Image (cartoon, rainbow, N blue to C red; front, side, top):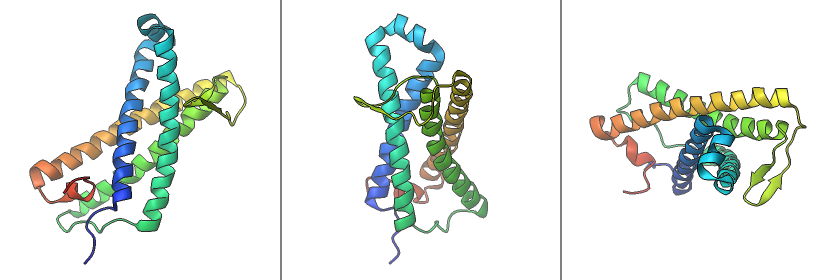
Length: 184
């Protein structure tokens, strides 16, 4: 019998990464809306510094978990696509999944490099990680722009991914959701 679900480690990684991405994007939106000075003024220095520190920490975790997820996918594969999927659904779901993987690697890499080029610490919990590149204000601005564009791409791709999942769960009721579900 062919297994019709992703392995439990793959499913756990999916949902752990989803939670981290949600929290990281929420913090990123706060940074965009308020900026450092606005956050500090509205929430205080300690909260602002913690937001930045744990945003960076979550980004490093997303990067590491995504690389592990790709390695696990290469090792364990994926269940076969369901027969209920149309050819267009197969192409769209594969494209969205691959682009989401790419964006979820590019996003923290751009953030890491932008932070280092800006002369800021790249924090992972209470450790400071190597910056990987030297301070360069102009490069930092470009990399932060790319980081922001990658975040927008992730949000767009997540919207498509969630819309597709909801369509299969609530409208088609074809079992696609079971493949990644932690339950049942």
